[in-house]
Length: 295
Ligand SMILES: NC(=O)c1ccc[n+]([C@@H]2O[C@H](COP(=O)([O-])OP(=O)(O)OC[C@H]3O[C@@H](n4cnc5c(N)ncnc54)[C@H](OP(=O)(O)O)[C@@H]3O)[C@@H](O)[C@H]2O)c1
Image 1 (cartoon, protein in one colour):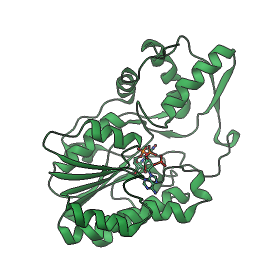
Image 2 (cartoon, rainbow, N blue to C red; image 1 turned 90 degrees about the vertical axis):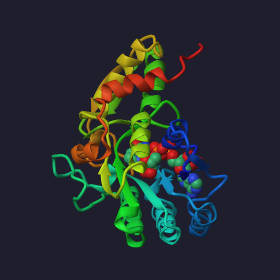
Image 3 (cartoon, rainbow, N blue to C red; image 1 turned 60 degrees about the horizontal axis):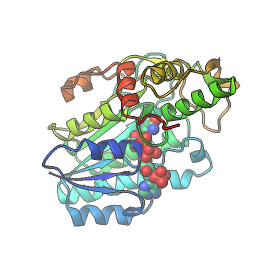
Image 4 (cartoon, helix red, strand yellow; image 1 turned 180 degrees about the vertical axis):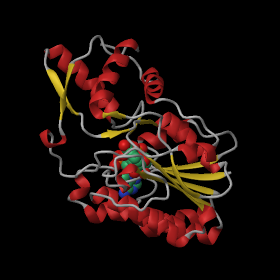
């Protein structure tokens, strides 16, 4: 099976490369190989490599910066999947478009189903929703899998878990505390379990919209506390810093975030024939994969 994975230097891209099944002929692209804002280049790479699958993991993921760079975010998050889909419609390949809980506005107060209408709040969510729609316009439904996930973190890259480990270390040493938003609810998802779900999606017949997150629900505040406690158990921290709960109003950001973004993954877990891991167990596995600091 020939597969193009985009976003090879991102946190999901790295996990996809590390977990690629045997027999996959992989072309992994980062910024140096393929500019995702260049729709013509996205089209050409598909026509030249003729992949069975494109796993579209590369994205403009700077949620706050997207508010001031909407055109670039749209080119990357909607233009690239649209171009992949158009080219794959010609070559007969399939697209796995990785998408996000941010396509929903978070106001319904119970988990979102895969078939629900999208109502994004900010530029990032709008561009990811546009990416889903662009892919749908060109590819037959059985050739397109849209896999939405949430709160992604892993052992490498830029993510909340690595930031919290750094802050626990710094604040504990300085004897100060950190504040984390406690009124946004969702579910963290490890790149290790997410990559596994992506590969499972490529082994499945048929397309459609899937939701894949680790199991359970939490707030960023509770997640920060768990990262500290389990970080000590994993030998990554000597001690935890005190974490204080903040409200969203206490911590204003350029982009509005959904206050409740749980995705209902029940039918998708059945479709992928995968068991979900509770987010705390998934966090333990990620922490185990992070090398202990040398000093
Ligand atoms: N992170 C989350 O919490 C989250 C939640 C839900 C869904 N998702 C989705 O999951 C997927 C993987 O996200 P991730 O967390 O792995 O993101 P990530 O770590 O930010 O990786 C995205 C990669 O795309 C690259 N990229 C951005 N613009 C590009 C361009 N114009 N040309 C080529 N490469 C470009 C980035 O490069 P630079 O680093 O150089 O910019 C980065 O390596 C994305 O589709 C994202 O929308 C993420």
